[in-house]
Amino acid sequence: MEELKQAVKSFLAWKSIVDDKVALNLDAYQSNQAEGKRKSGLDTIKLRLPETFVWILTPYQEVGSSDVQWDESKMNGSNQEAYLSRVLKKLTSQSQLYNDFASFELRINLDRIPLWRGDNVSVRQLREDFAKSPLKASCTMILLRSNSEST
Image (cartoon, rainbow, N blue to C red; front, side):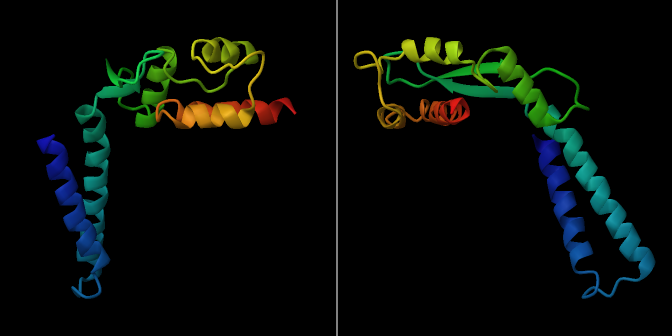
């Protein structure tokens, strides 16, 4: 973490110099040198981020429980791969993130949550039920997307 902090401090210092090059009356050589140091600082930050932040913390709730629990998993993959890409791949492989839900998968997941009141439930009611829990709120988007795609 300390190495990342140092890289950010260095980058911000050189960025400030580049931004104020006119006020600082830098000549072309000094301006190019400052820009090179700024770029080098940014590259260092890009290298330090994946080395520093390797844990993914994912909130989840057991069905019927109001307690929020956290799943910890270590990120894998190459440091050359985009950071967000690595996180998304890991969460998808652990079935903690879904890009798409087929209608049967959606139904299976909804059946695990006591939402149904009889044979059907309105989308408005589902939205209200999901809104009661912050961890269920993201499913509302899936529901709405799934509903709009079926029309």
